[in-house]
Amino acid sequence: MLAPRRFLPPTAHLQAFEAAARTGSITAAARELALTQSAVSRQIKALEDQLEVELFYRERQTIRLTPGGEAYAREIRDALKKISTASLNLRANPFGGSLNLAVLPTFGARWLAPRLPGFLSQNPGTTLNLITRLTAFDFRQEAMDAAIHHGTGDWPGAETLLLREEYVVPACSPALLERYRFETPADIRKAPLLHITTRPDAWERWLRQNDAPAEHVQGMLFDQFATMAQMARAGLGVALLPDFLIEEELRTGQLVRALDLPMKNAEAYYLVWPEDRADHPPLVAFRDWLVTETIADNGQ
Picture 1 (tube, rainbow, N blue to C red):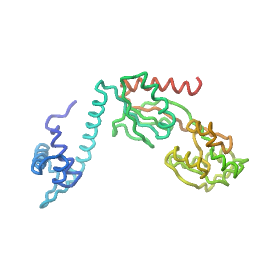
Picture 2 (cartoon, rainbow, N blue to C red; picture 1 turned 90 degrees about the vertical axis):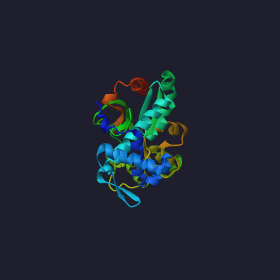
Picture 3 (tube, rainbow, N blue to C red; picture 1 turned 45 degrees about the horizontal axis):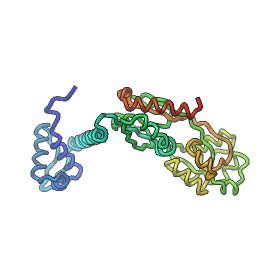
Picture 4 (cartoon, rainbow, N blue to C red; picture 1 turned 30 degrees about the vertical axis):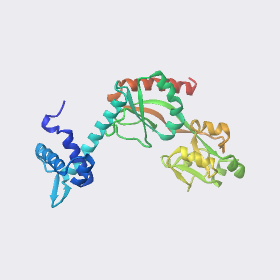
């Protein structure tokens, strides 16, 4: 149900208000919008009159947001961004076949990207917009149709599809392996250990699983697997890496298993989507395609 028209101000008034709120200046807002200062001032005043609320304190030649104006500015900024994104998506694909997908950076680069030409060739009317995300987010706050996420599959207000489970292996450069000549899990502690920030206890879990001392494990921190794999290749230490994300490095010998002791993670990779987007045609096509790809990957 749409709000009454008196609560739907003209976009020009909202843009003027948002620009002035963000810059803290009528002059700067006018310059940004290619308007005169008086035009911006009139639009803001018209908005205040329509809402019957004062949005700025006016002090000589300066403006300062009221508490209500500050909260309103945040809401309006998000709304204008959503309108802009929707318009951009429509222009990119006037037939409405756009899918906005949040994806983990390394998963997107190593697993998804090489397969995407197949999806796009099967769905020529679909535009896929990718945004990288390292952590979960609220679908209510971001205009995303779906996300590929690593976790337990528990995402409030969303439906999920299990894509694949994950095994991590201790991997390092051939030179590092030659230097340390690991024979037992406890030997791993002799080398520098590389850590991923999103799984700070991964090494402790691997060591405990293999009956090795797991206290006071330290080392360099990285926020992405791709960077950590690169550092492991350079010989900086041993990294616990998902085996399917380093297949190329293992095949070519750029990385080797420090010990052939994989660990299955409790978390897995999921496609997640808001319940109200379940029937969005590009999402349905993408979901069906992912099912086919993951079945092929798992040899089922």
